[in-house]
Picture: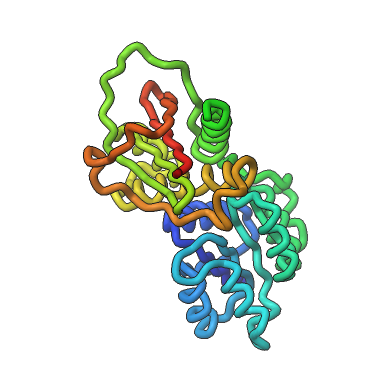
Length: 141
Length: 139
């Protein structure tokens, strides 16, 4: 079953790296949709079915917190799983994460294994095939 | 300030190693370097700047994207991402009073016009090429 994953980040390099890391998690066929800020993401989510959102916090136009607030207030989109990817290691943000009910956070620099674990958990996937030992090949950051 | 710069240098080394696969080296013998690329991140309280030689900018981008086919846009985008990660970690760990959130990084158009004489700076070496790290708390 294909999954539609929305990646929201103002850095096209980071979007490329995330796509690569997610693809290497080997969880099946994935269609990637990309947005460069929260406003762009909301627009795309109203036009496409999205199974999971990866979002940065620090973005121009509309940041990740604002995007999440909009989603939580939307009856249709409010249950879409969200993974926040951020480099901001601050306790104030931890409070913001709690207030916005953000449970899934990956801090940069990150390891792809942490992405794989979250994907399996959030998409309700079984740990896959016998040749798979849970390691993500070829990339280690 | 020297202690702050040391912490920033350590953190930069850690981020570039983990996410961009660059290992910091000792200072090489050759010292005539030209910085071609620069990125900056600032607000009314602080300013952080990274300058790169062409070689180190390419290497960092190639390592990050996992391809040798890279454009000028890829380079600036990757350098801005590197600065964003370094600043996000640095402010969150050591300088929480400087910003509610990390400002969005931007590319420096003309490095030669930069006025950075008053900036505390550290030079770091990767693959025998330098990266110049500058951080200033504004008055």
